[in-house]
Amino acid sequence: MAEKIKIQSLSRALDILEAISFGSLSLTELSKSVKLHKATTFQLVSTLQLRGYVSKDPKTKQYSLGLKVAALNEALWQRNSFKLKAKPHLQNLSDISGETAHLAVYENGNISIIDVELSSGVLIVNSEVGEKVVIHSSAVGKA
Image 1: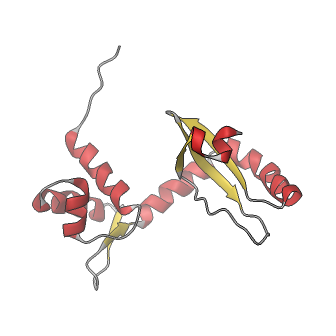
Image 2: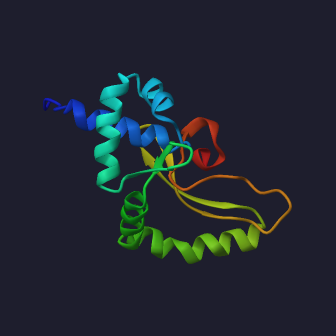
């Protein structure tokens, strides 16, 4: 089995991005969330901010995902031919069933939602692109 290499600072920076992906956080909240000293968190988040992966609201002093993350996401989906080919079928499935339709892929024991076509009905399932769900506890996983 190949030895796994882990770069601690990179792993910590990714933990920060994942933490603020759930919502804006202050430095103190972020530090607690990723279980790092406040000074270490500040250094990492400042570097991410300089590179555009994190933005800081000058009024609230809270950190959130930066536009660079959105640009990377857009680049990924523009080049994802699977998603582009599936889009018309996803829309058709939602139109025919009157329900929200999901496009998902298997990833490490979970299902990752890669596209959602919302229904026009009264009841709408609120799933987000990028959301990970356990296979056995979701309709899309069971399907």
